[in-house]
Image 1: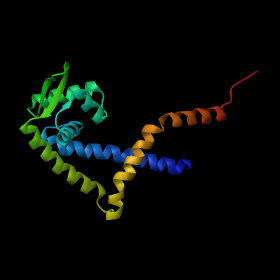
Image 2 (image 1 turned 90 degrees about the vertical axis):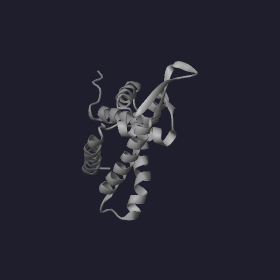
Image 3 (image 1 turned 60 degrees about the vertical axis):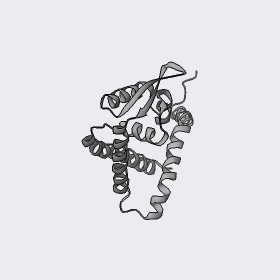
Image 4 (image 1 turned 90 degrees about the horizontal axis):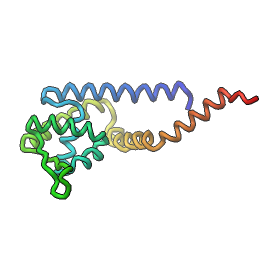
Length: 164
């Protein structure tokens, strides 16, 4: 792939990510939520109660980030944390009735955001997008070491070592 194509592709992905996150934030704000908190609510809605460490893994977030989100959502009455019976150091996180109602509102917003995001695209393309985006995400996750190795090789070719 030449630089111009690579640049256009990377810019498009970057801008989509930034604008989608900003749009999501503007939709979530009236509900008193910050980006990231909706993912936690939706995860618990899908799975039911989870140990906080498992929730962190499922969300792809660092444990301190999940701890902060759970504290804020608990203070708002949307989740409940209780000690895990098998390990008192671990917390089980679950939605309260308020959290279930909020998750339902988030689902409605998410449908609207998705429709807004794909507006103007053919239905066939929209149907294929989740798979394409998952592949792109997996590529970035699994190819990071390969990319670094390629950059190192490229750098070595451009500036050969000064062996005497």
